[in-house]
Length: 194
Image 1 (cartoon, rainbow, N blue to C red):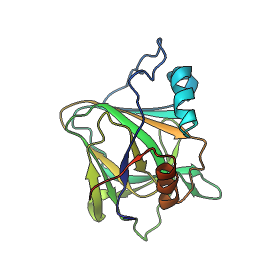
Image 2 (image 1 turned 60 degrees about the vertical axis):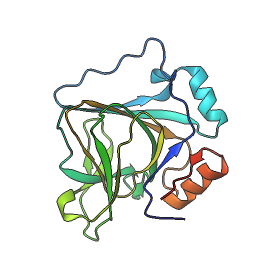
Image 3 (image 1 turned 135 degrees about the vertical axis):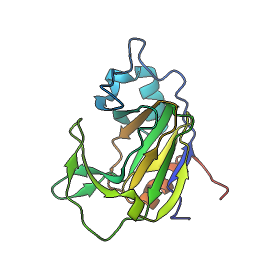
């Protein structure tokens, strides 16, 4: 297994995932983040569909970035602050953001303090220009398993980007290779050529 892979396509259909009355949140400026319960965003048929595939989705983080609103730092997602547990993976897909990319970096040895997003979620952040990049991908509308327990960032172009980041009841702190193996065993993972 290639531990340098930080994303994989997943065999999940999101064409009709939203509740009929779901509306995208209204961002205040060039950036927005919302933490929602799954049943407030997704319809029950879709939640049953992904649960039957082995992905019991219970919440979703919704991220908005306006044109050229790239992240300045690269961050890791934190599941529990004390004792520290990282959120090592998420299930992401994007609307818009045609010229945006997600990048992953090696985790530096230097410790950082914990900060909080406007939605109240914990993270640690580093200056991405001081980090060694592992790989990048344009997430796009196909559903991806993404690695969130190592520093990652978003580079924006001119197209606004909405990212839906589904969170499951699978332990967030499972090691990345374990999660990849689980998805492979459940026949959700689309193998990468490189």
